[in-house]
Image (tube, rainbow, N blue to C red; front, side, top):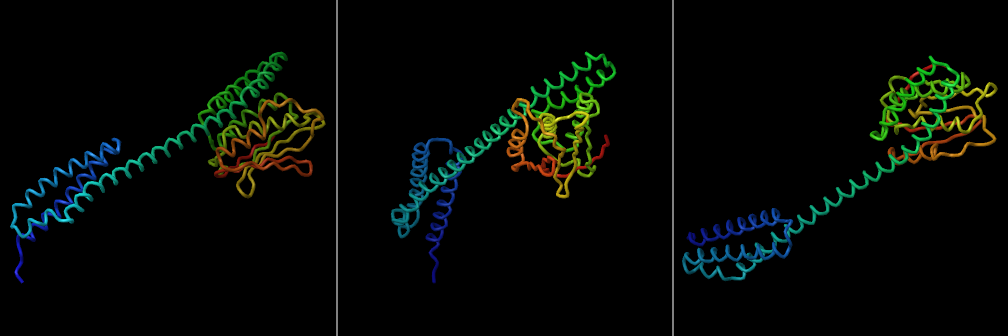
Length: 307
């Protein structure tokens, strides 16, 4: 069977032309995806029309038996595909990019909203704490307890620094929180003159575990707010890890008959921050005269200190 060389060459030429033109138009539509669809539509039409004009002129130079192929339905179909398919692909690409950018923007807004809510909750703690701390300092100065006043100011400085930097943090390690608590508890030990005692039993292997910043401060404030603390009702606050790797803060209940006015801090504040930052909630348990708050952790921790 004799091969028709011009026909074969023309077929290869037509195939390469169609594939090459389509690839060029797809790239052009993707690169100019930010342009209006109408603009890309007519630009692609113009490029396709000129290209197929050149294609037909070249096709007419071959033998007569193949030149008629330039004007068949196949040619029209190729023209429509080469024109419309790249426009469609470019538009799909444009919609995909817009969708991804919209998702990124929504995620950014969600993150900013989350951070704003966490900051607002954290900032509720600060004024109340500062007020109580300055009251304790005033009492020491009035009693002329100079050495204790100096140490108190040093501890207070450490605590203030930690609290003021808390707006830059979401989660901190349990080690950082316990270091803060070691300074914080001194203020209460001075304020209550040995009537309150903190027992911290957390092993070093769990100090890298994480929890929301300032989780312990509202718990201790809550204990002070709701309980009688005097010579007949000495308060022992225990902080340790459960078998499940959760932080448990417990204390005996010596409930006051009258509760101090709320300043917007406490368990509800801590619960809200836990839901925002950890996606979980704290547990509050009161049984057999003992009040416990269980704080989920993202790792584990244990350190021991005696009163």
